[in-house]
Length: 354
Image (cartoon, rainbow, N blue to C red):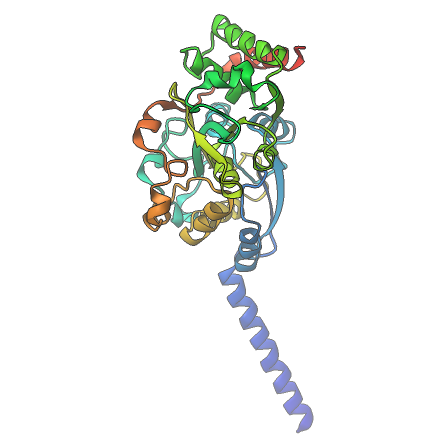
């Protein structure tokens, strides 16, 4: 009898284990899968990744890039290495044209229904089939109010010799050449050699006048908190982060206008785990997760429920939520096609200038 009871108990325990495993399998159909997410530095709340793995059983290997061009180069060299990428609008446009992105399956991403209307079918992805907006923001000037003696309102102030060795420029040729083009009265998407040559000459003179302290990206916000420069070109989220760290800092989108951008989540066509990648993208669009990421990285969210739940202080923050007059004088970057080589050549001349 004891043997029979032991056998019955063992059978019951086995059936219970099978039932539990079946339930887990139903709740976590992609458990045990690993995806590689290729994203900007400091651009996700690390706890979100842990929560995602715990809830789905999908392991995330997280890799970083510092600018769009680095991301594009690495992906082109090894297209099957990544499952989720987070490029900006003009790179998404380039990749769609190059048939490098997978079409997304809305059935696996119910949370994308919560996107703001204006981001659902952007110009760079007019059908909304290849990307899901992650964050958006502006490009502007972060400045130390104790180190300037005038209102900062124009791009031209970055080139004033009174700020010698006190200006941090952005190590990104589309942003840096773009702001100079805007200052000169051109579109930030200008492709003529004459206009780009003018922008090059302005930037070289800025270097030769000793105005540029450094060309950099992610380090800038902490350097500005430390009071290491008077002016810096930054993205709006980095400006918010820095202003939280120092009450001496302020941010402005210059009167000439600037870049307004969207970063989107995409899946390369060569992804090894596309369905699990879509589960990840959908998770990023869940309102509670989108709110966590917004709070961590300081950028503007495209999730309507998060926007609706903002405090009055957040809603009125012009850096987080630019007013319409600021948006109206900004423009999106477009893919410049083959002329990207002209941009790269001119940027090389700027960086090598002495």
